[in-house]
Image (cartoon, helix red, strand yellow):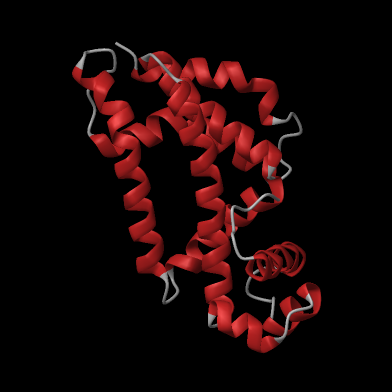
Length: 195
């Protein structure tokens, strides 16, 4: 896992928490388990995260930011509507393939975080990320390269099949790694939104 967490102690706690959440589930994991796995004191965990919900939220947001960093790096290289749409698919597939444990956590933790006291933080971060993504799409919507849909539909249309495939792969229902279908899924996304 390559979280873009600047503080070493926080990163160690988050990495330990991911192991605990993966092995025991989010609900069954305790602060004591995270403490044992990370070598951090309970006081240090509470200092950085307040409680288990705070740890799960911080891990979830760190995962989203890690994926976003990869996504925006590819988007910066894209120079056409097609390469922009395909970059979104490639970034998601590549991130999930490189970080399967973290990606599975994100799938499983969404409801937990949204039902916690930290839900507003996650909603706010998702809105910020979508606002950062819109200019990449709007330029091609405006020049007629992309079909016009309501803005909130683009993520579902572009990444829906990719996310579904990855979800099935992460759960073990499908054995072929997503990277094997990288170009097929990217082309399908492009055909869905191209003019």
